[in-house]
Amino acid sequence: MKLKAEVKLLSQASIDLVEIIDFIAEDKPAAAEKMADKFERAFELLGQNPKAGRTVRDNRLKLLGYRILIVSPYILFYQLRNDIVFVFRILHGARDYPNIL
Image: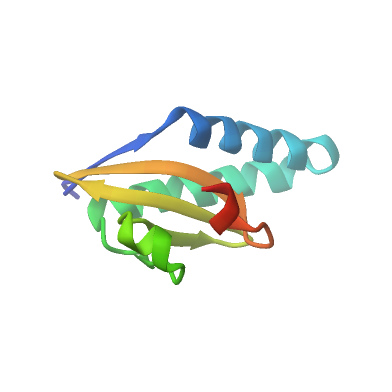
């Protein structure tokens, strides 16, 4: 399927992704591989349908144009600009993301 948008992981999102996979792999390598596959499918989904995620509830982040896509138990934080999906962060859903972003 043709992509509607290019997906770019910004540097901090790339760091988040590596840290998440490495952390899971310490105890459960197979689970880490499954999680990596879930993230890969999420990136493909955003490339095919950039508005697959929803707007954030936090008003400040909403004004900044952030959208989220849940990759349980993690949340991808992204913005869509000119047919490019910029992934800013990948955070655990339990984190206080309004104060992190």
